[in-house]
Image 1 (cartoon, helix red, strand yellow):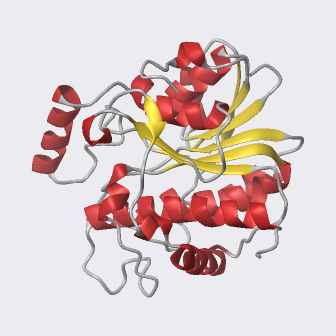
Image 2 (tube, helix red, strand yellow):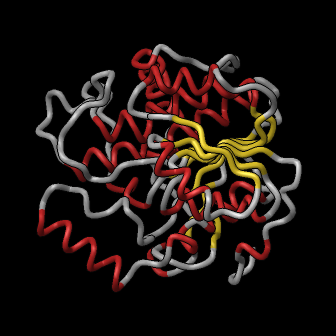
Length: 296
């Protein structure tokens, strides 16, 4: 990747099928648009199909909208059960950020349940169809994350919107790590990669329920953030370039806030194989879903 890598550098995606979760706006829509313009068939997996049909109408290329609510495991199972044929790339993009306390349809803390457990279950159920790779979106906020295996759903700890978000983003990286280990152990050619967008101006921010925090985040969007199109570049690079499994991409600029995509580092916690295995086990128990590939 060069310091000027952009959507113009995406090789032809003709003949490839991609699922992008949370594709109705922001990073997901930018990812959808770039891949569709490169020739891919893109399935927009979204919670609100009516809203997404309007977004899909703005995308030139082969796009399809299907319903998926990652905060409801029944919806995740229904989406996976309705899939047939090969799936080249699954982009686990959808997420919520620093929202007030709440639970999913299955009783999970909302950010952990949506950002991690929903994608964990979706990936496990779709993996028999995946031929190339899974790209999972994390965040530089994973650096502030802590995995409490005894309280993943914040039932004992005082709830922290920031702490819960950081935990979910650390979980995304640990999932990527353990998924790649299991794929390698199974002799699978499928790769597991991760990306983060830096600070991108999207609808993700400004939903904390705290007016002061929301205003500060919107001000940061206006003064510091890059566009959703720029923020999607690490995801796109992870989805189309020939990179080894386990790669983690983000912006190359100062603080990884903005810039062209490059390989970036992660915290020791995000690189801990034992923690990744233990989180995997806990996630499988919570969702009732596991991968049909053997562990080493």
